[in-house]
Amino acid sequence: MYFTDRGLEELEERRGDEQVSMVWLADRMRAFVDENPEFEDSVERLATFLARDEGDEESSEDEADED
Image 1 (tube, rainbow, N blue to C red):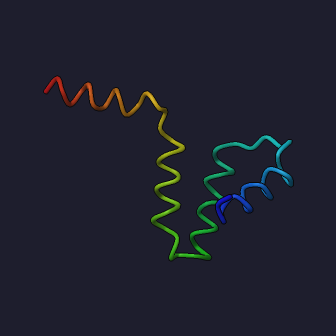
Image 2: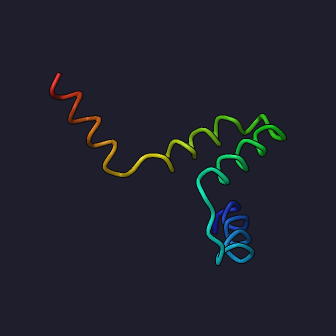
């Protein structure tokens, strides 16, 4: 088990039955970065990962191949 799995498990245990909006999630991530600016890059990478569909990267590559 990775160290980070403990936080993920806690999240799942405490809020696993809740539904949240992407706006709420983005606001919470911004608040986290405001309190912990050293994690800004990691949060940005996670946000980008969550924002993109698996198919998005393939579409971008296909468009680049057409040029």
